[in-house]
Image 1 (cartoon, rainbow, N blue to C red):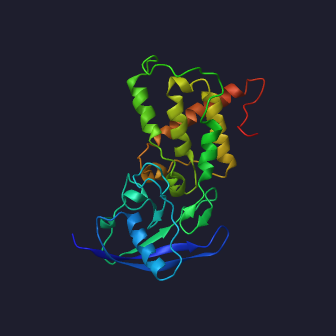
Image 2: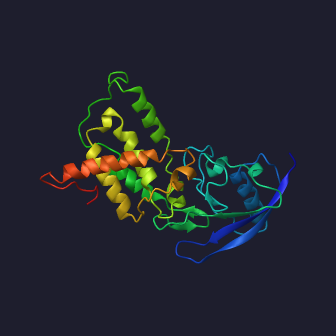
Length: 262
Protein backbone atom coordinates (compact mmCIF):
# COMPACT_ATOMS: atom_id res chain seq x y z
CA UNK A 1 0.00 0.00 0.00
CA UNK A 2 1.45 3.37 -0.99
CA UNK A 3 2.00 6.24 1.41
CA UNK A 4 -0.72 8.85 1.75
CA UNK A 5 -1.00 12.52 2.67
CA UNK A 6 -3.81 14.11 4.66
CA UNK A 7 -4.69 17.44 6.23
CA UNK A 8 -5.29 17.49 9.98
CA UNK A 9 -7.78 20.11 11.16
CA UNK A 10 -6.91 20.24 14.85
CA UNK A 11 -8.56 22.07 17.73
CA UNK A 12 -6.01 24.35 19.41
CA UNK A 13 -6.76 25.88 22.80
CA UNK A 14 -4.11 27.41 25.05
CA UNK A 15 -5.76 26.48 28.32
CA UNK A 16 -8.99 26.10 30.32
CA UNK A 17 -11.48 28.84 29.60
CA UNK A 18 -9.36 30.21 26.74
CA UNK A 19 -10.80 30.71 23.25
CA UNK A 20 -9.96 27.96 20.79
CA UNK A 21 -9.94 27.47 17.05
CA UNK A 22 -9.27 24.86 14.38
CA UNK A 23 -5.87 24.98 12.69
CA UNK A 24 -4.93 23.01 9.56
CA UNK A 25 -1.70 21.02 9.44
CA UNK A 26 -0.47 19.03 6.44
CA UNK A 27 0.68 15.48 7.17
CA UNK A 28 2.56 14.20 4.14
CA UNK A 29 3.97 10.88 2.98
CA UNK A 30 2.50 8.83 5.83
CA UNK A 31 2.98 5.09 6.14
CA UNK A 32 -0.51 3.52 6.20
CA UNK A 33 0.67 1.22 9.02
CA UNK A 34 1.13 4.22 11.33
CA UNK A 35 -1.28 4.60 14.20
CA UNK A 36 -3.22 7.85 14.55
CA UNK A 37 -1.07 8.89 17.51
CA UNK A 38 2.13 8.17 15.58
CA UNK A 39 0.84 10.51 12.89
CA UNK A 40 0.34 13.21 15.53
CA UNK A 41 3.91 12.54 16.72
CA UNK A 42 5.20 13.14 13.17
CA UNK A 43 3.27 16.40 12.90
CA UNK A 44 4.54 17.51 16.32
CA UNK A 45 8.13 16.77 15.33
CA UNK A 46 7.72 19.05 12.33
CA UNK A 47 6.13 21.78 14.45
CA UNK A 48 8.95 21.56 16.99
CA UNK A 49 11.59 21.87 14.29
CA UNK A 50 9.86 25.02 13.04
CA UNK A 51 9.78 26.45 16.57
CA UNK A 52 6.00 26.18 16.86
CA UNK A 53 3.96 24.87 19.78
CA UNK A 54 3.28 21.13 19.37
CA UNK A 55 -0.24 19.76 19.62
CA UNK A 56 -1.08 18.63 23.14
CA UNK A 57 -2.78 15.25 23.29
CA UNK A 58 -3.02 12.64 26.03
CA UNK A 59 -1.77 9.07 25.71
CA UNK A 60 -0.26 6.33 27.79
CA UNK A 61 -0.43 2.64 26.89
CA UNK A 62 -1.09 3.00 23.14
CA UNK A 63 -2.58 -0.49 23.33
CA UNK A 64 -6.26 0.35 23.79
CA UNK A 65 -6.41 -0.57 27.47
CA UNK A 66 -6.12 2.73 29.37
CA UNK A 67 -8.58 5.08 27.63
CA UNK A 68 -6.24 8.06 27.89
CA UNK A 69 -6.05 8.65 24.13
CA UNK A 70 -9.68 9.77 23.90
CA UNK A 71 -10.18 11.94 20.79
CA UNK A 72 -13.08 12.86 18.55
CA UNK A 73 -12.03 12.11 14.97
CA UNK A 74 -14.28 13.35 12.18
CA UNK A 75 -17.13 13.71 14.65
CA UNK A 76 -16.85 10.24 16.15
CA UNK A 77 -15.26 9.37 19.50
CA UNK A 78 -12.12 7.32 18.75
CA UNK A 79 -12.63 7.61 14.99
CA UNK A 80 -14.29 5.73 12.12
CA UNK A 81 -13.56 2.16 13.18
CA UNK A 82 -15.76 0.34 15.67
CA UNK A 83 -14.44 -1.41 18.75
CA UNK A 84 -11.04 0.33 18.90
CA UNK A 85 -9.56 3.26 20.81
CA UNK A 86 -7.93 6.28 19.15
CA UNK A 87 -4.48 4.74 19.56
CA UNK A 88 -5.65 1.65 17.64
CA UNK A 89 -6.91 3.70 14.70
CA UNK A 90 -4.49 3.56 11.77
CA UNK A 91 -3.68 5.87 8.90
CA UNK A 92 -4.98 3.22 6.48
CA UNK A 93 -8.47 4.01 7.81
CA UNK A 94 -8.38 7.28 5.85
CA UNK A 95 -8.10 8.22 2.18
CA UNK A 96 -5.30 10.05 0.46
CA UNK A 97 -5.99 13.79 0.48
CA UNK A 98 -8.67 13.55 3.15
CA UNK A 99 -9.25 16.33 5.68
CA UNK A 100 -9.38 14.82 9.18
CA UNK A 101 -10.95 16.89 11.95
CA UNK A 102 -9.52 16.17 15.40
CA UNK A 103 -11.03 17.68 18.54
CA UNK A 104 -11.39 16.94 22.26
CA UNK A 105 -14.45 15.52 23.99
CA UNK A 106 -16.99 18.29 24.40
CA UNK A 107 -19.07 17.90 27.54
CA UNK A 108 -19.24 19.98 30.69
CA UNK A 109 -17.88 17.36 33.14
CA UNK A 110 -14.75 16.95 30.93
CA UNK A 111 -13.29 20.48 30.66
CA UNK A 112 -10.54 21.09 28.12
CA UNK A 113 -7.07 21.38 29.69
CA UNK A 114 -5.18 22.21 26.49
CA UNK A 115 -5.75 21.45 22.81
CA UNK A 116 -6.93 17.81 22.68
CA UNK A 117 -6.44 17.08 26.39
CA UNK A 118 -9.50 16.98 28.64
CA UNK A 119 -9.84 16.51 32.39
CA UNK A 120 -11.74 13.23 32.79
CA UNK A 121 -11.37 13.03 36.58
CA UNK A 122 -15.17 13.14 36.86
CA UNK A 123 -15.14 9.43 36.03
CA UNK A 124 -12.63 8.87 38.84
CA UNK A 125 -15.04 10.54 41.28
CA UNK A 126 -17.86 8.25 40.18
CA UNK A 127 -15.60 5.24 40.60
CA UNK A 128 -14.47 6.43 44.03
CA UNK A 129 -18.08 6.86 45.13
CA UNK A 130 -18.80 3.17 44.78
CA UNK A 131 -15.68 1.22 43.99
CA UNK A 132 -14.81 -0.08 47.42
CA UNK A 133 -16.34 -1.88 50.40
CA UNK A 134 -16.56 -0.62 53.97
CA UNK A 135 -17.13 -4.00 55.62
CA UNK A 136 -14.23 -5.97 57.07
CA UNK A 137 -13.49 -8.67 54.51
CA UNK A 138 -10.44 -10.31 56.09
CA UNK A 139 -7.65 -11.83 54.05
CA UNK A 140 -8.11 -12.80 50.41
CA UNK A 141 -9.86 -16.19 50.09
CA UNK A 142 -8.79 -18.93 47.73
CA UNK A 143 -10.00 -18.09 44.24
CA UNK A 144 -11.92 -21.36 44.04
CA UNK A 145 -13.48 -21.10 47.51
CA UNK A 146 -16.56 -19.16 46.36
CA UNK A 147 -18.48 -20.77 43.49
CA UNK A 148 -19.46 -18.26 40.81
CA UNK A 149 -21.84 -19.30 38.00
CA UNK A 150 -20.08 -19.28 34.65
CA UNK A 151 -22.63 -16.93 33.07
CA UNK A 152 -22.18 -14.41 35.90
CA UNK A 153 -18.40 -14.62 35.68
CA UNK A 154 -18.40 -14.03 31.93
CA UNK A 155 -20.89 -11.18 32.22
CA UNK A 156 -18.79 -9.56 34.96
CA UNK A 157 -15.72 -9.80 32.73
CA UNK A 158 -17.64 -8.20 29.86
CA UNK A 159 -18.46 -5.25 32.12
CA UNK A 160 -14.92 -5.12 33.52
CA UNK A 161 -13.54 -4.41 30.04
CA UNK A 162 -14.61 -0.76 30.41
CA UNK A 163 -11.48 1.42 30.22
CA UNK A 164 -13.19 4.61 31.40
CA UNK A 165 -12.31 6.55 28.26
CA UNK A 166 -15.53 8.58 28.23
CA UNK A 167 -16.52 7.81 24.63
CA UNK A 168 -19.99 6.81 25.80
CA UNK A 169 -20.63 10.22 27.35
CA UNK A 170 -19.02 12.05 24.41
CA UNK A 171 -21.23 10.23 21.90
CA UNK A 172 -24.46 10.74 23.87
CA UNK A 173 -26.55 13.77 22.97
CA UNK A 174 -27.31 14.17 26.69
CA UNK A 175 -23.70 13.62 27.81
CA UNK A 176 -24.90 10.66 29.85
CA UNK A 177 -22.40 8.51 31.73
CA UNK A 178 -24.86 5.67 32.23
CA UNK A 179 -22.91 3.07 30.26
CA UNK A 180 -19.77 3.74 32.31
CA UNK A 181 -21.72 3.63 35.58
CA UNK A 182 -23.59 0.53 34.45
CA UNK A 183 -20.37 -1.29 33.59
CA UNK A 184 -18.83 -0.48 36.97
CA UNK A 185 -21.97 -1.34 38.94
CA UNK A 186 -22.56 -4.57 37.02
CA UNK A 187 -18.97 -5.73 37.28
CA UNK A 188 -18.96 -5.35 41.06
CA UNK A 189 -22.57 -6.40 41.58
CA UNK A 190 -22.22 -9.70 39.75
CA UNK A 191 -19.44 -10.96 42.02
CA UNK A 192 -20.12 -12.45 45.47
CA UNK A 193 -17.65 -10.03 47.07
CA UNK A 194 -19.67 -7.09 45.79
CA UNK A 195 -22.98 -7.99 47.40
CA UNK A 196 -22.33 -6.37 50.79
CA UNK A 197 -22.23 -2.87 49.28
CA UNK A 198 -24.47 -3.47 46.28
CA UNK A 199 -27.33 -1.12 47.23
CA UNK A 200 -25.12 1.62 48.62
CA UNK A 201 -22.85 1.42 45.59
CA UNK A 202 -25.49 1.88 42.90
CA UNK A 203 -27.15 4.79 44.72
CA UNK A 204 -23.84 6.53 45.38
CA UNK A 205 -22.50 6.15 41.85
CA UNK A 206 -25.69 7.29 40.11
CA UNK A 207 -26.14 10.25 42.45
CA UNK A 208 -22.49 11.25 42.02
CA UNK A 209 -22.81 11.12 38.22
CA UNK A 210 -25.90 13.32 38.40
CA UNK A 211 -24.15 15.76 40.72
CA UNK A 212 -21.18 16.09 38.36
CA UNK A 213 -23.44 17.25 35.53
CA UNK A 214 -23.78 14.16 33.38
CA UNK A 215 -27.13 13.91 31.60
CA UNK A 216 -29.86 11.31 31.65
CA UNK A 217 -30.05 8.26 29.41
CA UNK A 218 -32.73 8.31 26.70
CA UNK A 219 -31.83 4.94 25.14
CA UNK A 220 -30.34 6.12 21.86
CA UNK A 221 -27.54 3.50 22.17
CA UNK A 222 -24.90 5.84 20.77
CA UNK A 223 -22.88 4.95 23.86
CA UNK A 224 -22.46 1.28 23.06
CA UNK A 225 -21.83 2.08 19.38
CA UNK A 226 -18.94 4.39 20.31
CA UNK A 227 -17.49 2.17 23.06
CA UNK A 228 -14.04 0.87 22.05
CA UNK A 229 -14.71 -2.29 24.07
CA UNK A 230 -18.21 -2.79 22.62
CA UNK A 231 -19.83 -2.90 26.06
CA UNK A 232 -23.52 -3.64 25.62
CA UNK A 233 -26.21 -1.13 26.54
CA UNK A 234 -27.99 -4.08 28.20
CA UNK A 235 -25.91 -3.26 31.27
CA UNK A 236 -27.88 0.00 31.58
CA UNK A 237 -31.07 -2.04 32.05
CA UNK A 238 -29.30 -4.01 34.79
CA UNK A 239 -28.20 -0.73 36.41
CA UNK A 240 -31.75 0.62 36.32
CA UNK A 241 -33.10 -2.51 38.01
CA UNK A 242 -30.47 -2.32 40.74
CA UNK A 243 -31.09 1.40 41.25
CA UNK A 244 -34.88 0.94 41.59
CA UNK A 245 -34.46 -1.91 44.08
CA UNK A 246 -31.89 0.02 46.12
CA UNK A 247 -34.05 3.17 46.12
CA UNK A 248 -37.06 1.17 47.32
CA UNK A 249 -35.07 -0.38 50.16
CA UNK A 250 -33.55 2.98 51.13
CA UNK A 251 -37.03 4.50 51.46
CA UNK A 252 -37.71 2.18 54.40
CA UNK A 253 -34.38 2.60 56.19
CA UNK A 254 -34.14 4.70 59.34
CA UNK A 255 -31.35 6.76 57.72
CA UNK A 256 -31.19 7.70 54.05
CA UNK A 257 -28.37 6.31 51.94
CA UNK A 258 -25.65 8.97 51.62
CA UNK A 259 -23.35 9.72 48.73
CA UNK A 260 -19.68 9.30 49.57
CA UNK A 261 -18.21 12.70 50.37
CA UNK A 262 -21.37 14.25 51.83
